[in-house]
Image (cartoon, rainbow over all chains, first blue to last red; front, side, top):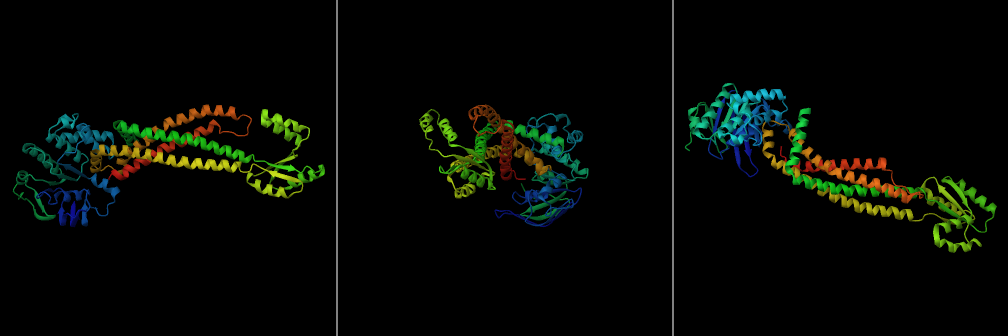
Length: 228
Length: 297
């Protein structure tokens, strides 16, 4: 599913965000990526959806070799993955339904299919009844659920989440985690960068800890391992 | 591209036009002003060129026949001129006719010349036309060598002067217009930049969910193109309207002379097409400038 070999990333300003990363993540895994701020978690994740290119090394996602992937083909890579962010990234002028449908519209799906698929997905995240509301009328947790719905509406094999619970209160965070669990149980790989110690230590999954651009720990059913 | 997608792009581009309000207005105004000037300039230049060409084509050589020449000499000279391969026609104009022409052309002042009717000082003339205006000078030189050709005259310098005047004004005009075109393009590219900035979140999400680069670019292209096309409407109307009246006016003024201005149809339609194409080009180019610079995809 995801394979990184000797991946290095040096930014133009000299910062080394990845320094020899070797990792394999299989289909259907649930992986937490933990580590202090500035450790290179975001770069690690961004390289997966090719927002950043490694300066050295090889990355394969779903069998696609990212070094050889032309810029014009990047959209095709991204159609097979969903990305969720801390700040939701919803369009405030569009309704919940439209926000989720947006992901399918811009890849030119059929309108009938879009309608069916969006309603199904909203049902899955428990927001079918709020389809016509605007994001501003929703709570933070609900907004994140819309964002998750958008990321999975195209049935991707991989969902990448960068601190999805970072802006949410503990209770809401649990709700969001339940949704990720459900998605994972359906066979979707999930890679989640997080600072949430309680979640990592409670819902046990593989933990990859990154510090100074290196993987310092990779445990099958790991602990958060840092004091907050 | 699917029809539905094309519709979506058009809709998005119009939404941006409305959302950008004043910038849209400023860009369209810049295009309008530029194209009005381009249009007027083009109409004047093309007509002047046409006039110059028709004058050039009407250049005639006037061969003054030696006063001492006999009728026989005259016939010989006529045959010699006619035998030149470049010559199209030779018309004899006796000196009495020449004087009448002179008197008529001077109008009221011509009366003074009536005194000469008793003792006409003018020469008999052969009016020679060449097949190709470019041969005029060569023919003049040949005729000058013939016997009994006292003086050979043609429209020395007038055509050259006209052409050089046209060239100078054309160059000045072109520089001016290029400056204006760049201003219009710059304003359009700024408008598109504003759109790109206003929609950066949308663009970011489109990229994340796998929209192709062209899918993202299209609405911006279209927006630029609309700015250019809408900007060309007033210039087209203005140029067509003005030419419609100017044509009638000029035709009346120029009646009887061999100078002609270009016919309303198809000239105005050609100019309109050109203005529309220029508008669209300015618009697309302006948006391309911004897309390249600000739309990082």
